[in-house]
Amino acid sequence: MTDETKGGKPAAGPFDSDSATAQGVARGLTNYGDKGFSLFLRKAFIKGAGLSDDALARPIIGIVNTGSSYHPCHGNAPQLIEAVKRGVMLAGGLPMDFPTISVHESFSQPTSMYLRNLMSMDTEEMIRAQPMDAVVLIGGCDKTVPAQLMGAASAGVPAIQLVTGSMLTGSHRGERVGACTDCRRYWGRYRADEIDAPEIADVNNQLVASVGTCSVMGTASTMACITEALGMMVAGGASAPAVTADRVRVAERTGATAVAMAASRLTPDQIINGKSIENALRVLLSIGGSTNGIVHLTAIAGRLGIDIDLAGLDRISRETPVLVDLKPSGQHYMEDFHDAGGMLALLRELRPYLHLDVMTVSGRTLG
Image 1 (cartoon, rainbow, N blue to C red):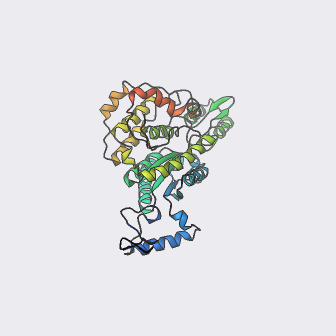
Image 2: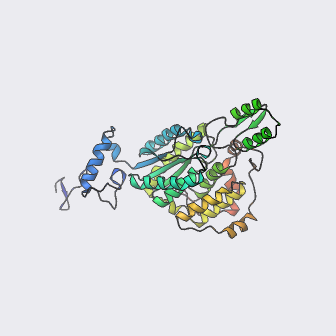
Image 3: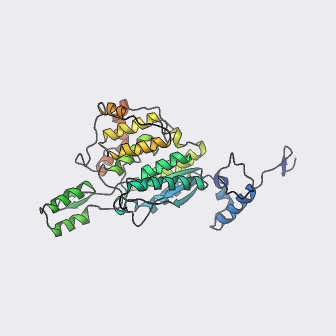
């Protein structure tokens, strides 16, 4: 038997593709009526970027890039992308970042909410349209994480969420401040003539001390915690502030985990189910989270045909303890939650209330 034939059949050439088992650059070929030519042309173009055949033989990990000059919540996206790429390459994959639209609360008019569904469609279609064996979703601001999870759930490709992390807190005349609860409090004092124009200008300079999402338990922090509870994020990935080394290490670990998910073909529908949704609702209640969390969870669950029972939510709310003391209902900030152990500590306390047999992106159960 020659090298050219095995079992009487020609050996697979470099441009042969079986669509049923295709991986990496051979996935989802453009339709030119000739699969071999489609792969030949795709490889020719991507090699124009300097990629080798060895690189193109590896599993491709897409990285959703929502960085934007209009989006300070995602101001650390370039650093996170590089860390994810490092994790992907250390694990033997080929990272490919690509842009989608980016939605920021205070830079979207008339409101960001209607853009959530547009962003989910953008995310879903770009995942479907481009070859990737798994995808890392980088988001943070209120509507971006639910939009990305909605899109990924519909696309059906192995997916893992990475949040940008919360901003650091600032200081005004010896008082610790952070967006966005303190924004409303100081603005109310200014409108009531309790503080003057120079002081409100000073406050304005201190409320957002770094890039990152709001430092309180608003919708962004809530969705980060919910996502970890769903099993769609690496353990401990919800709370690390945006500009810390912890956040960068989470990003690297996320990239490596994505490669493992590509190998096992662990898709969102294997992770998000009725039990994991209930776990997320338990966490929402225990953190005193944003009521928007219910709206977004309903949309994410709906993409997989899962209904959220509001009567059931009311029932579990009567037995689930509130464990986190963060603004706006409490006193502290996300930095403090992270320092206290973050979601790992919270889930340990909630253990008797959780479904521990649900799957997570690690390939292991929550338990």
